[in-house]
Length: 243
Image (cartoon, rainbow, N blue to C red; front, side):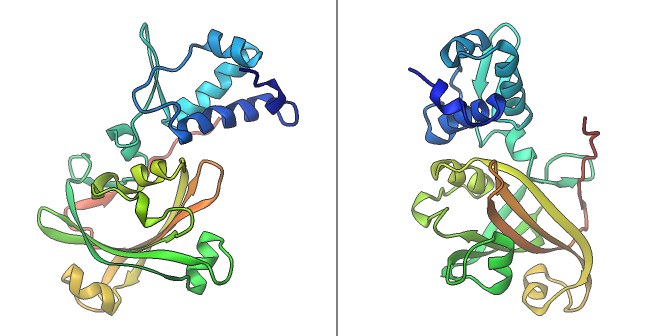
């Protein structure tokens, strides 16, 4: 199959990366599948091994592929633990991922509010899926979260039942690959809506978490506004040197 016509108008590394990501998003490269070697991709796309290696390095850093010495390169499962760790920052005191249960308190599709439109960068009149969830650790509630998703991008029909892997798998089912997320943490007075579910007093000081998750192309996929009681848990923030 001839691919070179797709690569002539942009830097080769970026276009190759986009082409490989399309294979993953479409399901052509499914979780667990072994992908062609660097030399095979070089021949297929008529690109240098260095360009192919750079594209694969990006996919590996973003947790889309796993390279195994002596075995090859494989597509990572979006429900896999390493993938989930990218977005789950709550830890117990021993550093382990918090084992949690999730309860959906409400789930509606409605016209986006001003805040939802601004954070998701969608047009006036656009609809969102608005989800309110409560998370528990060892039976005790610790996170009350308001989530908004662009309804056109992530329709209900493509949802999955497993709440732990919900966003990663639903996104994959919709052909959306998750990229980066940025969250802002602050101390806030617990609002009335969150106080009863969190079993705390209205106005009590809690941690507020606001943030946007993007697709690999930088398009906002999810906005979250949450309130957290931090007893027995902490929010992990890895600090890595960028080169």
